[in-house]
Image (cartoon, rainbow, N blue to C red; front, top):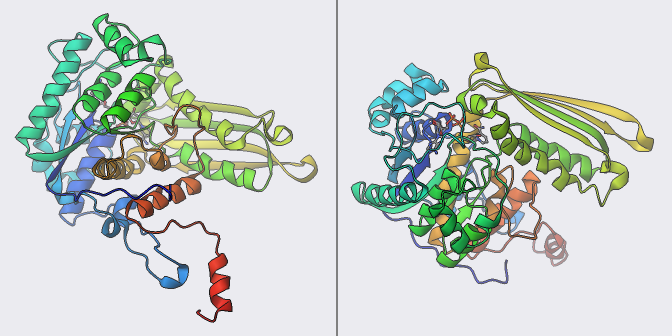
Length: 447
Ligand SMILES: NC(=O)c1ccc[n+]([C@@H]2O[C@H](COP(=O)([O-])OP(=O)(O)OC[C@H]3O[C@@H](n4cnc5c(N)ncnc54)[C@H](O)[C@@H]3O)[C@@H](O)[C@H]2O)c1
């Protein structure tokens, strides 16, 4: 990347519209958090764009600005939110229903701002998301009709709110599992499949396609295929529109992509990894359906194999039993419990165990990721970086990469890649951590 000339990044002038597909737990927690932060009533904890720093130059230079002061990101004050959802509840009611944030402390002070966000009727089809009872769907539910309506909604939102730029982010439910097939192989096939009401065209693909046709970057917080098909990837590249996905990396997989690289770094072996989750929010209810769970399971299972490379290290990782379960348990609501039992082995094959019990909060972990993704996708678009934004792998369980490449899952390699991309974008030197130059400076009596 350093050999590629740095792009020119257009300034973040005017309003940024964030179009959320889904006005559920993650989206309402995101919106409420931004509204509270804007008023000085809450801290955006967990957001790299708001709280993170970036080192420039050498360690001895002591030049470590905040990321938001280094790259031109949209200010929180300039964000306007919109959403589609098959339920009619406005953002305030939806946030109350989600039960993530305290109604008195965190929702009451921003009630007016939340009530003003009323969901647009959704491009929804019950065949892809089971267990919901839709009450707010588009009038024309043909695939072509929904595609055209999403495009109209995008344009009306842009005009009505005077947005200079838009970003679309999917925080809607996880759809049933779909394999990439003939309908996704080319744009012609994709277009024909829309007209033929082909079941391999899911609503998430229609949102993604509409976004690309309208020049709006698309980030995918769920494991749905959506924009991750040959047809839409190629279109994104041709149109110069930024895309990224899939599936926010928040709880258990976040831990997995820290612990598994640690095992591999130390050449410790692994016999088995059993992961189970107890969660009781609407996401958990949708994922309780086997077809919807399969999409999530595929996203969660891929991580270990990619990190551990069993074909390269058969003695250490050639026979790993990896199991992932999600159990819908309503009393827990959004406060998820993620259990991991890890059977590892060390020197001469002696077995050991590690147990992790992460009592986390799903949407509290996901909201700052959604914010960062929107701000970085907008930045990428202003930098003219179309196509897959692999540098945003940091945020995803199944990072979208160009065909033929394997995804990078190690959280700290992902962070290095992200920060080096920001340095490159701004014409700063990337940091290799080689460190030889410090020794040279010392020899020359400079430091
Ligand atoms: N930690 C996390 O919370 C986390 C982590 C990774 C991925 N995710 C994914 O993010 C998504 C959102 O999670 P959540 O907890 O907010 O779920 P949620 O069930 O609270 O919200 C999802 C919303 O999407 C709506 N929806 C479904 N189909 C839609 C469509 N076609 N168009 C518009 N809206 C639609 C639903 O009505 C619901 O309100 C899920 O797919 C989840 O798997 C969440």
